[in-house]
Image 1 (cartoon, rainbow, N blue to C red):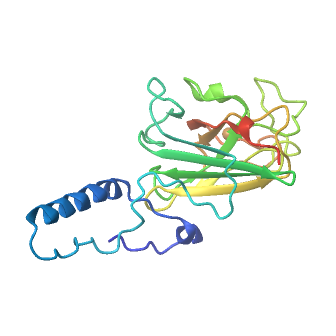
Image 2: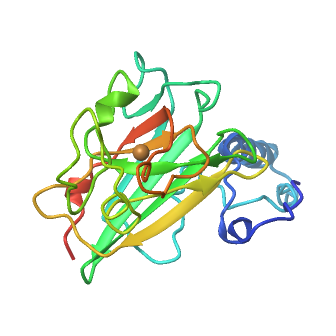
Length: 238
Ligand SMILES: [Cu+2]
């Protein structure tokens, strides 16, 4: 039994997924039943069920959102760039190999909702996160600038947008979060636009704990620690 963590509201709506334990549980139960049948004889006692499993034994149950928004779901386990498929860590000290990122996105009524869930990052730490324009690659730079609905005309590849009129959480998709004692956390946002001819392709986790908002630094969040490819272009424009 893991005692409930006294803490923030997100703990109350999150479903904890005990990975190792839940994966093993069905096998143990099956073995018990087989043994009982083989012995014949009197009605066997029902197999002892370990008390109060933390969650239904669904090893890869998807996250349960408050409202269905899953036009697109992407998830991955962080790996070094030379081994990564869709989830990259560029700094294992701050975004450990084996940590998991999951993103859901959907659209309706002219708005797009995005949810990021992380497991196994550093505990009790803020991480800035955003949707970026291009897919993850060998280095953090590959993901390009933040996706902007209205693109800042002053931005260049060398000098990304830092104008709060464009680099803000209504024109970009910001998913800053804070982890709990286990290194788990989540963030959700709703932006007042849908993707048309352009869509982001990834979510990047940054070194800074929050995204800057002041003029001249808006949207800045330090180095790029990790990246997850997300096919945002498959979000139906609802
Ligand atoms: Cu970013």
